[in-house]
Image (cartoon, rainbow, N blue to C red; front, side, top):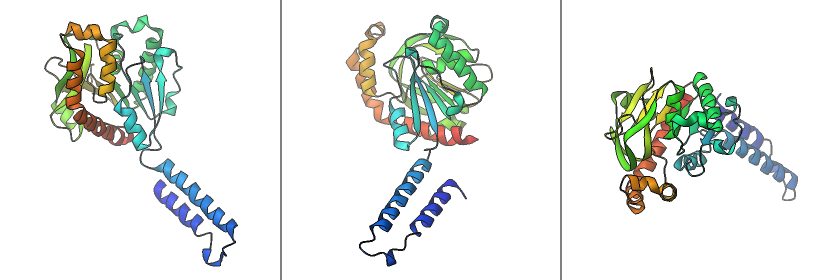
Length: 286
């Protein structure tokens, strides 16, 4: 008997324990007891629903780069999560408490990890995640730090990518569980100057024209150079904070915001599809 069946069985036992045919209008004790049982049952079912038993750790590395639509997805699916601000000195918890890990961006280069104590600690933490073969999804810097942990280089990309671009799945990407039901080519959002090499033993999953390495997988750890989770409201904040980078690529804030707006509905849908695949086909794969 699975979890859901046990919950329904409990409801039947609890509900049937009160015989309303014998209860008078004044028998409030029986009515209250029944209401209490139903409430207990509802709480049990709520805790067992969907991915509700899962718990995720999301790691931020600066104040303005975070989960975006990933947070919305987790809330909608009833998945528990903790949001850790590594750059503010938060203590990294035991990995055993979590079923999956997300790591987000920072303007700090992955080549400068040793200059920041919190990133050194985070690098060691991610190394433990990889060794334990825990599901990991690193986005932008989160993908680059994974590459460093796996022994690959992070270097400057020939051009800085800011705005809406397209990426193409490789043959390995087309068959990878994370990108199941994805089209071969799909729009993404970018804001980065560095790029990762593909670590030895990892599979390259996606490529771009201006940045060749866009995604890879090693075991159950994934690195994405691109963003699907980004909201236009996030981009507006980045445009103010990183205005000098916009100038360096000859773009204006309103131009980049328009690029984001044009693809946001599609990238949000892709984000949800990717996360569905991640939890169903990667996290629950064992």
